[in-house]
Amino acid sequence: SSSSSSSSGRTWSEEDIEISRRLYNLAEGYTRGARVLIENSYMSLSASDGCELSDDHSMCPCNSCHQSVDWASKVDFMQVGMLMGAQGTPEERSNAVCMSEQVSSTYKAVAAKESDDDFTRVGYLYFANQATGSYTQWPKQKDMCDVENYDPRFRPWYAAAATGPKDVLIVVDVSGSMHDADRHILAQQAVKTILDTLTWKDFATIILFNDRVGQVYSDTLVPVTDQNRAAMKGWCDNQKWKSGGTNFQLPLQKVWQVIKASVDSSRTSMCQKAIMFLTDGKDPSFQDFATVKEKADEYNAIIFSYALGTGADTAIAKRLACENHGVFYAVPDGADLAHIMSAYYEYFAHGQEMCSGSWIKYTSYGGGHQLYAGCMAMYDRTVPTPELLGVSCLDLNLFADVSEMKDETGWNYFKCVASDVTKMCRAVLLTECHRQKIRLSYSQDSVCTETYNDYQDVTSATKCPCADQSCQDLSSEWTDEKGYFCDSWVGDNCSNPDADWGYSANGTAQVKKNCRRSCGLCSYKTDYCGVSSSQECPVTPIATECRACLGRVSGVDIDGATMECPPDAPRNLVNPCWTQDCASAAPPVVSLSIGVASAVVVIVAALSMA
Image (cartoon, rainbow, N blue to C red; front, side, top):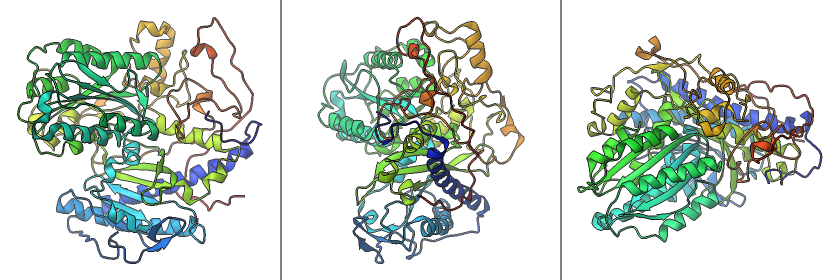
């Protein structure tokens, strides 16, 4: 139960939730402040600026670190450390150091103000850079020097902040040819790395195939909680990855069966669906592109295809991606397959500007502490369409003892707010121009060249159309006649919804009127909307009630419990007939007037916890 941590039997009041609300505002305010600082720092950089990683700022060897009993690690609370990533041009690596140095002063100031005097509360502040994979953290920590090939971009907290919720179906060829060049080992590693980019807000399953559908982790999608992720990795270890022939038709049919079963049983994020199709073989008999496109359009499924090694059928794999809004990757033997496949989320990062924070519960390296992190993406705003610069996070544990907070009446409110803002679907605002540029960034061979693909002559300098930013949904709290929020329509056909859903003509009209952005009804303007830089993200007001008390939700909350209206919430407007067959039923309602919370501010006064 999502309410099991509350010790009080009464409903929460405005006074009860004020501390939780202020704590949420404090964490989001500091994180937003770090974003503004990094974005402005990047905008002010010039070609003549150059930053080198100094010994004092380098995370390693961390000679100044000393053992802390509470942190179960060697740390230096007076310093911020940086691990330089393995990628990037010399200019990108220099810029990463410059941004790290800028945010370090903020991290040290926040830590000095909010940590307890003896640093007994364990909580980190950290930033990862997209171009290089570099990582900056307060405090410096010796354990980070011992992590081999650490790339923060493939940690769950990073992808969670960079993209919205999604359904991911990982479809992998395990035919006999996967034995060649140890492809079966690379494929298994890639699947596990993909799972590491998913969090509790995402749903996934794994389908292995050869000349038939081999093993399937689950016939419906499952939320990627820590427990489920570990189970999926363990399942991978026990499968056969190199036997049999190759058949593309059967696993793709299984994909649509899994999606339908998941949608019918509400085991879905209700957001975008990504199909990751990996093969090293050929199936000359496969011709059913029309059915794949029909089903992909029906379920808003994007196909990412990967042709591994010299024997793979690149023509079929590329056509599957090009006809279904995806990206094709030709992956030579010996390439870093795990990195290539797990970078799929960058596609969504291009089309989703994440203006609000995302929350995640995770286990820290070294000490193994359970931490709650508020994370926020930051963007390069020197260009008309914002591009991902990186992610900055702050652990709630820095401000308060979470174990004590869980005993307070307002904890369920905090969990609702953190879970709801993280689980909201984000529209992917990409035109074919944007997709072609994404394909080109991997390889010229990935650019789609069929007659139905526009922008075949795309270059990195091509100017793409942009969506009208004034086109937004009416409200994040509005629900349609079936109890769904606007964002749950992302990827669905709002003009002609599935007849089985039972929407009236007026209900459909209301969805189109109130959910224009989520329905994909915003107009696009040519030539970058006539601007040379992008605007800063708007501040998102903090909700006052749980979405699970107002409409239909799915999946689990930040603690991995089923999303439901807590019994101590002030009111519950959920209609039982949404989830069970009944003629009519009046939802229980407890009337309580709660005002709309004010917008988050970047500078927040110190919080005094009673």
